[in-house]
Length: 96
Image (cartoon, rainbow, N blue to C red; front, side):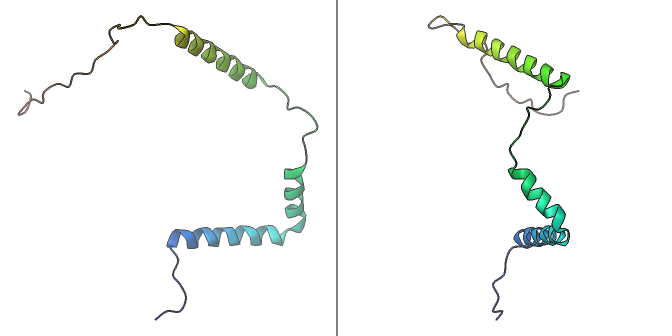
């Protein structure tokens, strides 16, 4: 009987990858220190706006406006649904 408990392969591979990453970081202490201080440093300036950011803001605003218009539209009580799904009967045999 094996005294060590078995672990699933995925967990073993994750553990192996985490160990390799920690060894890689430990081999370069300056890089490891820079990585930890960079993550905890507060942002001093706001990020610069790019044309892509401006376009994304414009698109988000237009989508929000459209959703607002659709959601504010009041349907009369008892109105018929726009579409009703009716399944078609399956055809027997091959279509020629």
